[in-house]
Image 1 (cartoon, rainbow, N blue to C red):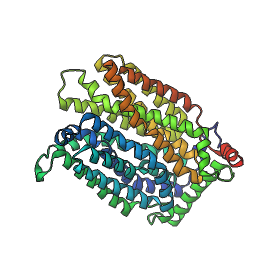
Image 2 (cartoon, rainbow, N blue to C red):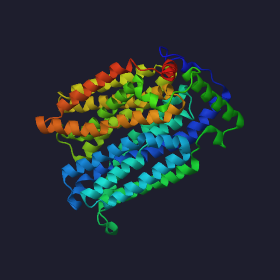
Image 3 (tube, rainbow, N blue to C red):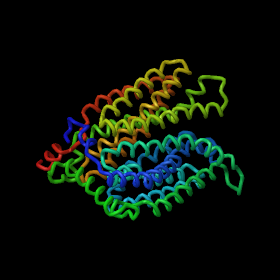
Image 4 (spheres, one colour):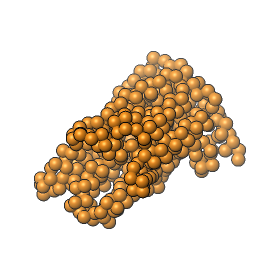
Length: 444
C-alpha cells in the first residue's frame, strides 16, 4: 500500500468469518448511528425553522439572530479536537452518549431563549456540547470497519443527513403549529421536543453501542479475532512500522492543510445551497409554499441515492480520489451555471450541485481515515471536521453580503464554485497512506 496506489488496500482478501463479522457490525451499528445523526442534523438546523416565530415573540432582531446562529460554529470548532481526544480515552460508547444527552438538553433549553443574550449563551453551549460527535463517529468507524468497506459506512452516515433534511421541514412545521398548547409557543415546543428526542436516542445508544469489537457479545470469538486482526494489519501497514509521531506533528503536515481545504470547500458549498435553495425555488414563480417545500426536497432525495452509489463505487474500485473529485466537478458546474441561468434551470443545476457536494463530502473522510495513524486518528479527524465546518459560518455571511451589495447571490455562487475548483486541484495531491510522512515527522 503506497500513496500512488489508492487501490491496494481495497484488494485485501476476505474470509467468510470476517465477512460475517462485518455484516453483523453493519446491521447492528450503522442504522443506530444513522438515527443519531438524523437527530443531530435536525437539532442543528431547527433554529432556522424557528427564526420568524422566535423573533416575533422575543423581539430578537435579524442581526442578533444571525450572530446567535453563527456562534454555534465557533465553540464547535474550539472544542472539537479536545472532545475527540476524550472520546479516544473514555471510549465511543460513553462519549457519544454524553454528547447526545448534553446537546439534547441544551437544545431543549433553547425554549427559554427570550432575549438575545440567552440566545447567545445557549448557542455557544450547544456548539461546545455537540463538538466531537461527527468526527467521533468517523473515528468510531475506524475501530470497526476495515478500509475496504469504510466508504459504504461513511456513505450511510452521510445519507442520514439527506433523510434528516427531508424530515426536518414537516416535523418542525408540525411542532410550530402547536402554538399556545400547554401555555408554550410553537417554537418552544420545537426546541423542547426535538431536544428531548436527542436525549432519548442517546440513552438508546448507551444500551446498544459497543466501543470496539472485543466488547461485542453478538460476535463469536472467531469473528472478533478476524476483525481485530484485520484492523491491526491495516494500522501496521499505514505506518510501515515507523514509530508513531506526536499529535502536535500533524500541525506541520501539509496533508492536513489539504484535508482541511477540501472539506471546507465541501461544507461551504453545502451551506451556501442549503440556506438559499428555497429562494431560488420561489423565483420560478406561481408556486405555493407547500410546492416550494416539496421542490426544495428534491436535491436531497437525489443526493441520498448518489451518496450510497458513490460509497459502493469507492469501495469496489478503490478510486477514492476519483470519486471525490467527481463530486467537486458536479458541484462547481452546478453552482456556476445556477448563477446565471433561468430560475427553473438554476434549480435543476442546484440539484446537480447538491449531488456533487454531498458525494464529495461523503467520499472524502475515507482518505484521512486511512492516512492518519494511531493516536493521530481521533484528533486529526476532529481538526479536519472543525476547520471544515467553519464553512457553515462563512457561507451565510458570504452569500448575505453578496446579496446585500449586488441584489443577487450569483456572485456568491461563483466564489463557491471557484473554491470547489481549487479543492478539485487539491484532491490530486491527497495521500491515502502516511508511511513516508510518518517516518519524516518521527525523524524530525
